Amino acid sequence: MGNHRVWKVAIVAVTAALAACGPKKSEPPAAAGSPTAQVAPAPTTATADPAHDHAGCAAPAWAPQRVVGFALDSCESRAWATLDLSAPAAGGAKTLAGARDSVTFALVDQTRNPTSAAARAAIVGQALKTGAQLVSDAHDGYGAVLRRVTPQGEVWMVFTHGSGNESSTLSYTLTTLRVAPLAQEAQARPMTGPLAPQPATCADAPWVARSLAAFKVSGCEGRTWDRVTISLPGGDKTLGGARLTVVHDLTDDKLSPVAMAVTRNWSNALQAIGAKLVSNPSDEDRAVLTQTTPAGEFWYESEHGSGNSDYTASYSLTTIQVIPFPQQVTVRPLTGPLAPAGKTCADPPWVTRQLTDYSASACNYRDFDQVKVTLPDGDHVLAGHVLTVDYSLPDPKHVQAPLFMETNYDNALQGIGARRVSDPKDIERTVLTQKTAQGEVWFVVAQTSGNDESTGSFEVTTVQIGGPPPKACALEVYGINFDFDKSDLRPDSEPVLAQLAALFASDPGYVAEVGGHTDNVGQSGYNLKLSAARAEAVRAWLVAHGVANGRLTARGYGDTRPLVPNTSDAGRAKNRRVELKRANCKG
Image 1 (cartoon, rainbow, N blue to C red):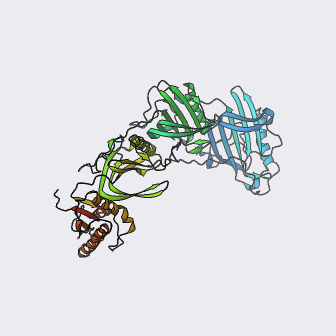
Image 2: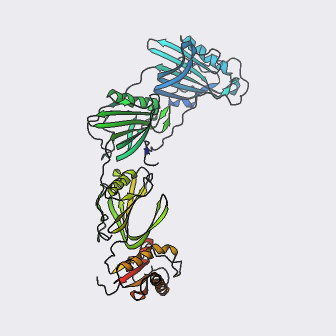
Image 3: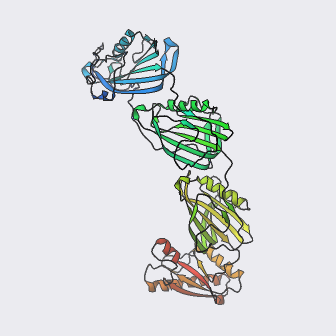
């Protein structure tokens, strides 16, 4: 996704199956129908039709008598919705809005199957008797649109042939739309203070004065700072700031509004307090508005979640306050040998202030080891003193985006002269390097759990190449690798071996024993012999690369001196090592 995050929020999907009402002309004809359809008397009780009307389905008042052979199948009501139709006698194509009811009838008696024209005529005849006027094409055998003006308002009536063809009607739908304005339910108020993107209790943003009654708040997601790219009619716009997204779920399926009703409610509410609509006004699923107040620049988005254009199971409200980047991490140059902070796990010595919401949870220092990093020009192996600090998030509510983590470290380290060498489009990992009087220092900050929108944990690895030699009497060395069950050095050991050779070269008085150590897997006697052979292989390599023979001895210890219990893979890995023990050293 690069450095930009598309302004979208993952919402738990809620599906709703709605009856299909559109014409389907491709189905094969049923048995030949009668040329003239008849209408059945209107039912006198709620049980006169099959069980489908248990939800309150009823034929519309303008066509109370169903076509003979048909029964109520399903119905749908919307307090407010739009309806697109063609009405040549009333000005042509129209989009109407108001209270909309649709009832679908299905054929249950195949011997009564009428033609599409006959079914249409049976319904249109009833509507004309109410005073309605036919405003659609009189020769259209698949549909009819009628209009009636009453003292209570304008009523539109629509017959739609469903499944079947010209000689067969298997279903039809009657739609009634009573023209009416949208009931403005949502209300807004201007923001008077900064946005709190991670409130202690999940609730709507402060600008929401009244929400939609059929929904409840079901989830919140906030970021102290986020980079958001939004699509607008004039092109994409990228914002940086605090973000709060609140998800709303439907509480009563019968009250579900159409997508346009939700979008217009929030668009109207925000425009009423002076916000400007900047997205497409005809977009039924999404509205984006912006407003500058004494409290700052704010952006608002209402976005349809699960459902479809006629059914809204969930929607979200996103608020962004445009703010400068909040720099939390501060650092200082490394001034001495890289070393662990002590018995307590702590920040690396070059970090003076860490991200507010994360804390050090594990530390691992190796006197010598190697780290592989992938850079735009390929893989690189870094060998030297290595310190890795793992960071976790004590409170999941305060999770931050990986871009926030990465930018904090980039800004801080570049501020002391480090240079970023990793791909700038990689928002989950950053690698920087710096040449100092203490050697070449590499900084690797990488997300260890989460995704491109949230960081559950991350690690900071520091590699110091060269610099002053460690003063410890015993040095733990990792990254020296052997073939399985052999004492043959593998070629990938050379970066660490080269660092050991440099250590001897930098300190002419350094005399040491090379000790080989294993975990407890296998027989102790065999491990002792194998570790001795491996220690000798390391000693021989160093002598072959310039270290005087008299400065080195070799000894195998097998599994007799573990650093930690051999009770886990991590513990066994730590015990498999080479040690350099300085001669005549105490401490």
